[in-house]
Every structure is written in C-alpha cells, then in structure tokens.
Amino acid sequence: MKRFALILALVMLVSLMGVGVVTAQEDDDQVEGEADLAIDYTVTDIEGNPKTEVSVGDEVVETIAVENLGPDDATGVWVEPWIENGHCVIDSWAVSWDGGETWNEEDPSFYWTDLDYPVWDIGDLPVGETYLLVLYSTIDSIYEGSSEIYMGATIYGDQYDPDESNNEDYAVLKVTAQEPVREPVKAGEVPMQPTGAPLALAILSVLMTIAGLIVPKIR
Image (cartoon, rainbow, N blue to C red; front, side, top):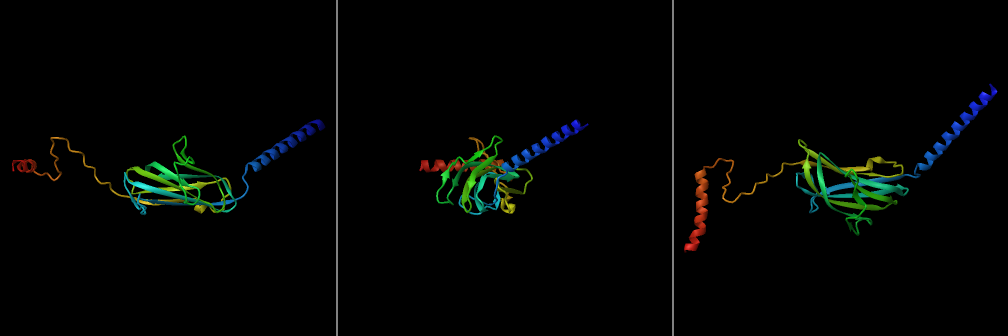
C-alpha cells in the first residue's frame, strides 16, 4: 500500500512539473510591452477630391496612414485593406516609410496572400513613426441590391493594444446608378431610339446627311 502511494505521489509530481513547463513556455511566447496602434483611412477620386459616391468603373485612390502611439515599439505589424458589398481591382500602389517625403512604387511590403487577400506587411513600427500606403483601385463590381459600399483597413500587431478603437477606419460610399453604355453602331445599320421614331424619318435623316456630303463636291 505504501509503495502504491509513493508511485501515485511521483506521478502527481511529474504532472505538476509538466504543467509548469507548459506555462513557462506560454509565457515565453507572449510578446512583452504594449503599443497603441492607430490607423487613418481616406478615399478620394484621382484628382484628390473626397469620394462619397461610387459606381462600377470608378477609379479611386485609397490612402492608409498608420502610427504607433506607444508607449513601446511595435513588432509584427500588418494591415488588411478590405471592401464590403463590392469588389475592386488594385491597379498599383506606393509606400512611404518617412511620413510622405519619399515614395516607393510597387513596394514589396504590399502583396497578396495565397487566398488572394491584400496585405501590407509592415513589421516593426517604432513609437511616433507614421507610415503611408496609397492604393490606386478600380471598382469592378457592386453586389446587387447594395445601396452603399464600405471601404477601409484594419491594423494588427504582436503587442497588447490598450486602445483598439483606433485599429480600424473606413469610408461609406453611396452607390449611384451607372450611366448606360451605348453599343457601337455597325456599318450599314441605323440606330433606333426607344422613343419609337418612324422609320421614314430615320431614312430621311440619312438621306439628308448623304446629300450634305455630295452637294459641296458638285459645287
């Protein structure tokens, strides 16, 4: 009986030691410090005017500014741009690592994941630093029935963030009707308007046009 109790005590001791090792490992995996990461998102047209409405085919400029408000430097920082109720194609981009003084076009820190999601992989973001990303995009589809689309970005990092209210920013764009695209007229065809204009009137118009081209030659 004493031998069994001794074995049981040894098993419990080993179990407790294992728990301690796991807990210590988890503590080592945690990143120390805290960093208040902030993000600002704006969307304009290609001329820099604020964008409040959108339709399919519109070209937009997305500007994303990130900053570390401290108190510690941040590591493992990355940004995810996103869009809801629609889809856009990113045509080109540029990154500034000095607050907008210089720009790097097609900077490799911005890329697409294996799942085709865009990511801005910043890495380290020291306290007080501001980095910028500009995306030149085209709205190529809007979900049917949507009256608004949402475009924005979210920032993430390794450290504890004491204020997560500024980790995401976005713009709300009202969906407007797209101007109808007229189909090109084929040679020899007379385009008919939906007003139901008489065919004779259309033929007369064509004849008058031809006459206008011939008369100057006769003179």
